[in-house]
Figure: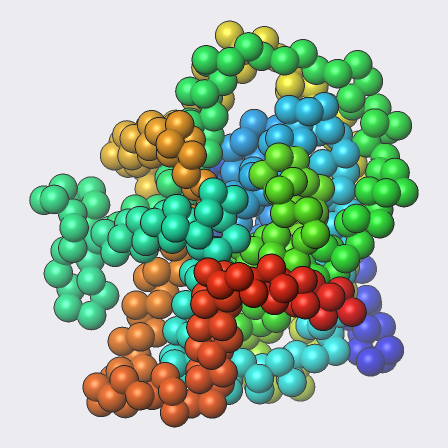
Length: 501
């Protein structure tokens, strides 16, 4: 392992690779701050440049944009309640209340630290266990993936701050929205209402920015804007106290573990990882009522999971040749441009590429911490911008971000429509986060369900005859039933003690 890391250091520490890594993480952070754009557009624009770069340098730069976006995406989530990326949507729930209560600097500082810790943990898992995790991921078939997605939906409904019934309704609405567009199997349009722009479905960026960002602007227009606390951007205000560190250690560790495991599974990614980490933390926390009101754990856990998943998502991409997201598909394209075929032998055939990428991840995460912490004071000053300037500028940024996704005015109108819906949900005391979870997991569940039924030739017992799927379904049933029984609190306390242990 030491020899491999030294080989990677010799590759990653060349002046050109260091400069490209710095440029990649800086660009990724900037893209993450702009809502709705995401790393896919940035990587797609940079892909032609990789023709003129060595494969190691090309992948180092593109990967820097990828995980740098996860750092930047939390900035506007915390300060303006506008998710910079879909995976940072869950950070809005507690990050924005922290900013409203004068703890924006602390939230951004702890986000940077949790992201760094989660990233380092994910890098460690990638370095030590890539072959083993690749074999483990191959054990998961369509039935197991369907069952774990179902568990995620049930958990999202149960941990909703407005109750299980309301949470279930929001999950169901999210699943329905996820079915809009072309059916992958039959090629027919579903629930489009004859609108051509909906044939490609609704983008998650449109929904996330709408129900969080636009809805927040509408709500803020009816409220008196609060002044930024004196010295909120200074180091003293950002530095966490002993109690904050104690409260954040466990959530960061659990979030990193969830993110590392979920990120290594093909087809999941950061969205699922951050949602599951938040759901787990809310379930095991002794003070569940603080979630949604500015709980530091609600910011630390999903951000740690987000960064860990961003690193381990390279495991199935490189070792199996299975991209877990469109962004990872572009990474595969960059490799194939240079004649490198991802697969189980990539570590043996191209050790300088693999280990150079691993070491560049560590260097890039260090660069992100150095870049982001000094900028916290500047970001916090956004809260001091007068509302007459801040809110129109926010709407303009949101509309530009929504338009840039597919260069479609329909996405702009959909964003505004979901903003109105998000505001109405707030008035009716519905939590929007379960809707996003249902929207993300619903189409994936449908796809894996169809695959499982095709493999079994229509026999639905495949979900029970496969041991892994049966075990996950049993856990799902227990979690669902106990949430309605009087023994639910006893079960919850027992699970908290077990997970803490």
